[in-house]
Image 1 (cartoon, rainbow over the protein chains, first blue to last red):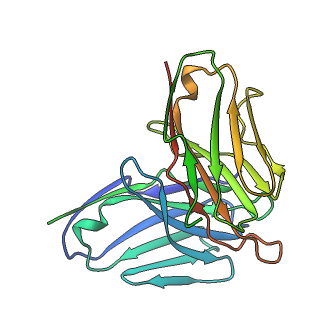
Image 2 (spheres, chains in turn orange, brown):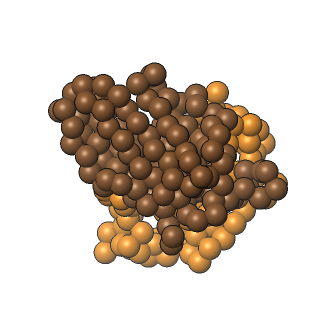
Length: 112
Length: 117
């Protein structure tokens, strides 16, 4: 059974700082990994998707990496802004079942 | 449509009543997923559809929960004889399948907040 852990559970940084969010998983037989952000009371917004065969993806100030051998993924946010404040979730897609297993998220606060 | 839509956005019901939650996926998306998010807990998978069939129902918590999808589009999640522990946000997502593989991005709807009194 896939287990996904996100550390830290909460993070507070001053505006402008670069930061890294961590995601670890127990079963490396994944099909892809997806990072989402969730604003309070809202649904999930997709940020980046990394296929199993890929090592990283970049979109603007965001960079996500995937290391299946160590069971880890990181989301790097450059030059953080107050608008980046949200909960960030990683999800592993199970190729056999199609479902995703989510971590509990990291709640990020960027202070002006 | 432009995105995944869900209705109602909020539903308050009394214990023991049945409820129906609706999901309209992105047009053309063949895969549809239901998840729920309980207060203080993470996202929990419920069921996944490929077209109108459900290859994976493993996440449905009890036989009070059922879901169907018609015409490869709209899906309805039904909860019978609701209990207070069913209170949660129910999220729907859809994705396109490329060549029968699960490579594509899941796009989520805004969710339905269910409160069982």
